[in-house]
Figure 1: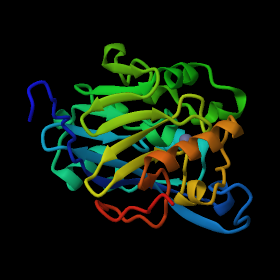
Figure 2: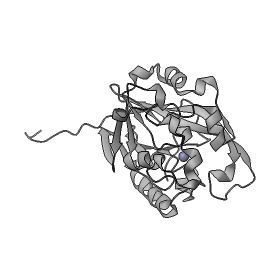
Figure 3: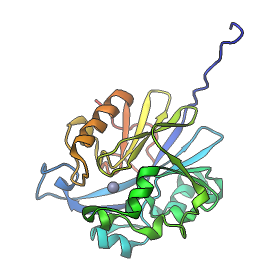
Figure 4: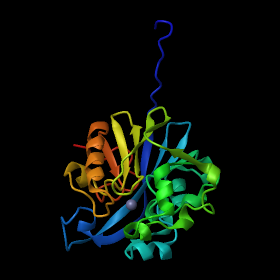
Length: 257
Ligand SMILES: [Zn+2]
């Protein structure tokens, strides 16, 4: 190589899906009016990711079922679906091994276990953190302060993102608003392509692939813009509640069409 030519390091991330519990609900809750009247049980997904040096948890699932059931009465969680048990089983990790926790957003089923990581840095969009302190009426039930307030995550643990942000080689966060005002997705280079850990901008792969919004939406136009962005960026997707993914899945994620 000529002098001055920089090699851009582009790590490959190993990602493993971790089931954090489940929600019994009407299918149309995931896919706007489609599938109405069909009751299904959908998983709640988080995942673990590592490049061999840095360990990351994306979303921390449910914690306090009693609080969660005020927002969504159909929540369930088994002991091995609690985040500390799940990272031990999936990766052999303890909370002290986790360098970063990334929250796609601060709804109760995506940040419930945040308090278990007092030594980790937390990455969230600043807008989401601010939104969580002053939710609009329709979303208030989904924001439960005990999971992300200062008793759970100390202020200096937060590393706010204001837009798209490179976190590490081969791993970045991008704003994907619409489900919440400050929602973000995580893009990871997994070798065979780019995986998007989409949180709830896509509850299921059918949202982006069918161009079909989820039910919980604060800005419809932004939802469709976020779908278009994901189609440009990602080859595969790990949605927040996709039923076809298996616990521990690490390679066979649904494609983004
Ligand atoms: Zn959500």
